[in-house]
Image 1 (tube, helix red, strand yellow):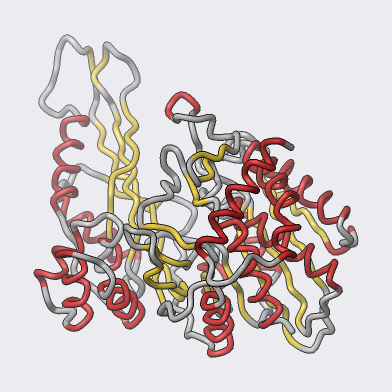
Image 2 (cartoon, one colour):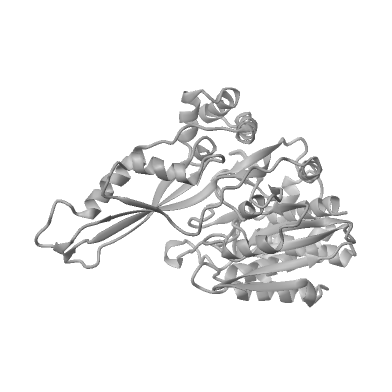
Length: 462
């Protein structure tokens, strides 16, 4: 309890300084239970291979039942070694359900690499540290706590609100596919794993993006082979050396510059508040997508290169079978984030042309990539999000955005369900280290997200 109290005090102090209004007493009352739930969620190692997602789902279910939810409105769906979780908040049935989306799994984290234990929630200097604080156990907990608060308040929505938590978003998305198969008749989906607000280097709010599109996720495997042999008798066709040359060609290749209405609106809004050459390039590109110099400047920034082109990068290498033998096979995994409207097969063809190695075999790895369309913005969603954001930061621009990465939304978009990424947090670009070392989130964003989601749901589902 001492830890929770420390985090609570720090988070509320930061929130009070950032918000345009005083913290809601109801939010203050929620914080101890919220932080306790988040601390427990972070402690469970829900990365692939540890089989703890079902344990986290069971913990969430018990918390919901203890706060008034009927067991019949909670379902845990086993999927392979993981699980999905469904929570239904029943409405009057006047409209189709509103879906909420998140995921319980995280990317692997090794204790020896981190400054702190990645599976112990720590608060230091105004930040929460731990695997999943940014991606995305905080979002899960906030949505659950918001439903609990609504239940206690006796809120009666016209739409059923259905929370869908997948268990393998970071890997195969098998649980996501199962959820999309079961829940494809809905008004729209709100995903806490995308969108959100951007702060400048001084911590001032710059823009809020509603994610309306995302790039296609695809993994390719490049494989080279040889007869092998004794390491004391090296041959010129060593596949490790050949693969290294192929990857050098890939590293030097840039895919064509691309844009759409969503990316241009996002870059224009961010360019108006980004200093230096990057901000000028964003504005120049937004005004003229054929400006090659501007595109090149944007492409030098890892946070924004994906907004102007498809990206492919080698992420894993496998090969060799013994220290004292010539390798018989070596392969590299190449992860691609493909611009909407570009087919996976065309990217495979491009890789083949770039590598220009007839001895290399290129295969698309499972699961089968999902090419999803952009979601047209709904006026009611935009208005509700705008009101929730402006309650904290008045006059911050609200624009559509495209995710460089992939989210669960793509499986619902491809079935025709409008999906919108609406994370309630504001963070600096590249400040959370999601998927990386020492993942963190400003502590102020926990109460801020609670306020955001409560206002959003009471507006859209009333």
